[in-house]
Length: 343
Ligand SMILES: [Zn+2]
Image (tube, rainbow, N blue to C red; front, side, top):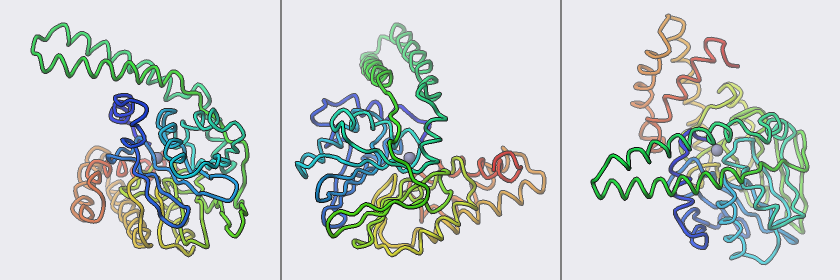
């Protein structure tokens, strides 16, 4: 999940529907009949998906952030198999992972949408009149109005063209946003749900609180592969709703599973378990440094500045290019936790 909306929406709507699949996702095999659909251009706003081709249908993990992105995923699946999508797993309740559900339901009316009980509750809590949608439907028209005003004030040709493109892009994006109707899971479970298909088993596991309270991993024990949602990302962890202490415990549980590759919620396929160790180390460090800053009376603003700089220096090489920007949000979340404002 990410606050910056512009890039993904502009990218989504700037392209004709037929070429969106190519433009939005890189589909790569991870094991026989298991594919990762990696959202392109390192846009956290559009989450990754995974496709698991089973005997009598396809299981899709996460459905991207918009119906048009979901249609791009469906086009990719149709390149791989004529089988219908029979199951969707929503790994957690964040919009970038499930607002594509409606396009899948339109294409495959019998599809079963599965999540943890807690994830469905969180989706319900967000409501169909999602506050994010409500906010954007106010903010985007304001932004468009501002660009239109700028357009009337500039005579420079290049700038006029850029503004015109932006206005057109956002007007189309607004239309798509207005058409989004979040679709809730139809089947929920507490800790473990196992699908059996021929020789293959697919385990849906809730291992504890991590990125959210309801994160589910989709584990293929025979293939030593899993899809993790945002419990693990190819880039930087995004601390949203849960403390890093819970997240560390859940990563410990994840580490005990036998896997060689993880399809994360964002960023590229993760090989091996090394990243789990890195994330745990980073979370511990982040909390220790922030807690001691809080304990000595440092303000939020100064803590974010000082601790971010130290963490960037220490971890920059081992995380993705987004780390210096993402770390600030993590420090401020850690500060809220240290102060007892968030738990
Ligand atoms: Zn996400």
